[in-house]
Length: 531
Length: 58
Image (cartoon, one colour):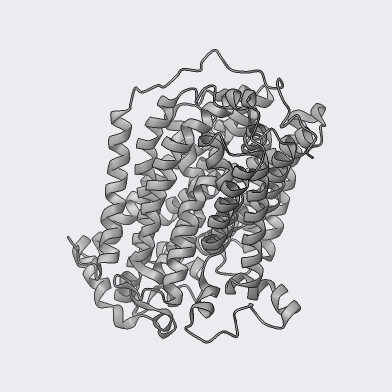
């Protein structure tokens, strides 16, 4: 325990030193929001990756992989192919260039200026400010659960102390502090994940023996999961079954595609001085994501085999029925004692790097996009951003307090899905299609958001049943609860909102844009002047 | 090729994850010095231009 505390103190000392360095270099609002647009490729890539990957990905989705097995690795394929390659090459370059041409400092500001609309900037900022705390809360829960298991710290004390540490350096140092600490934290995460996967395969006798051991355990798959369509941890799922829908529509598609419209990631494209840094970031980012989600999902699935050999129990039993406790329990019971201390630091790093980005994005959405730009209080500037960060932090803490157990992966998927349905068509078409109009963007954003929320509140069983609005209004948990079991209508309650909301949002964007007044040619020339 | 995994679904995901990362490494190396149009020295001022839209569409 003493070793863990000393290592934690050294780690926090490094973070604060980097934050102090950033604070000294942060003199203007542009520094606070975009690091003066002079970030290097390694810092940018590690910051992007470390913000993208959090305790949510490692503990939440790692726990999901312990339930659903190797199928979850499809999310890693999308994380790298879409979240790194397509994001950097097709979105990053245009975002950086258009952001520069339009002098945009935040994601909502980019959208607002592309369509010459204060409403779009204000609406985007409001959605981000209102909902990013839910995602931040999921990350906070992950690190608090790990501290609870690993250090024996009470859950609430862990929530408060992690929040206080982060608040200090995000409020003072802005995005430079966020990115410097991200790069340091990302490096630490890489080392720990390499050790985690190496040791796990070593315990099971190598790569192929490990996979074969897990394949042979298929008969041990819990009855409830089998009834949902699971065949085994390496055997996959029955196509079209409820769990197949959960894995491929919510986890793989929802999160895998949703990453493209994540405001806290998109803003990082605008921090680099040229395209070269983005190309190089593809290299660092691809490897980084493989070592993060690829390792977490592989180890999560294999934890069943390791636990069973040692304790005669599968992972979900070791986690006491809580998916979010599986990875912490695995590290604490199966890895060497010294490792759990370092892993705790790596997870603290993962959580802090993501949360700092979330707090910064939520804060600037309120301070810059809503107060300064939409409401026209220009004199507020840096102070408004810092107040925004404080409010975002407090909102995240409240959410972390009230959200139920086993929620990390779902809360993350919720935010990714909501961002995709609301922003992705207006953002992607705005980058590439001159014919995309202001009205098309507005209708797409409002329609995508409304469709996503409707599906969450009235169709998707997990959220609809938990929130209870559908039951209160109709007396049923979901609108399709009465459908014939096994019918297509009945299966809709396991289909992610994005399967419906995102295509609808794209259709609205394209359809309305072709029928409405185009954006003025001079403005379009300005938007695409550097593209 | 299956590496002891029990389905093509799992084995394909395993291999594609690794291949996707290798593809990113290849892209990064191939375009290592591809700078695009340099923007250094052309940074616009923070508070110039339109403040998130000029039309009365709030």
